[in-house]
Image (cartoon, rainbow, N blue to C red; front, top):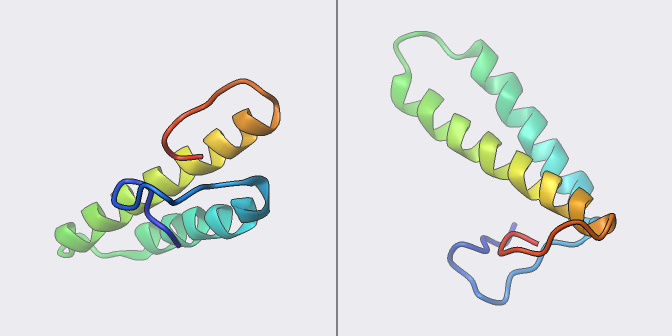
Length: 72
């Protein structure tokens, strides 16, 4: 998946929503199963899940004409 934080040509459209939503859900599922001793991995997954959720929210907002931003 393109990273709009690193690639100025990356765009996120409604056709990408399912992939980003799946990524967020998968990350959240892994977070819930990680043991306490794996703080670094938990932190990485939290960041990944939050980013995917922001992109999904941005796609939804753009589909409704509410928002224009970097992650779309």
